[in-house]
Length: 145
Image 1 (tube, one colour):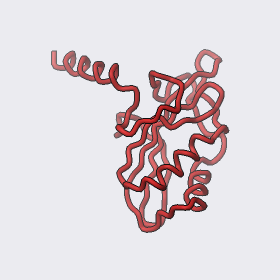
Image 2 (cartoon, rainbow, N blue to C red):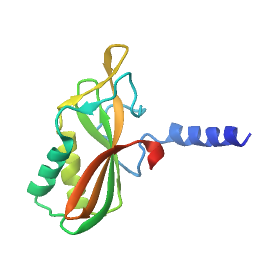
Image 3 (cartoon, rainbow, N blue to C red):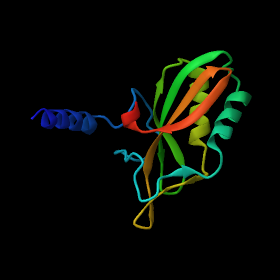
């Protein structure tokens, strides 16, 4: 019974919410997220950490000496274009956050998720972990948050 109540509560939250994090953007096309779905998951064809690092290093804002996490909920559509749906900012650097968001929205080098041999929309979560003068990029699943 308690699992049924938990399921119903989570279903109600998911039905109401269209994005995982509180800071939402309306740039994306999809209404319902499909996290890491498909027979093969969406992935960036090149080195995403280098693209994000370059955007941070060459942006107008600097992030030196910062520690914490920023989570980006990203939709990768069936054409390989990415779009930030929502952000959870534990570092509270809005200027760097906007630089990263624009960088991610400008990435067209994604391999979309494949389901039954066709490209589909998929949602991923990037964890951008700052530790002093170093930034690490990793993919996380909603349950890991």
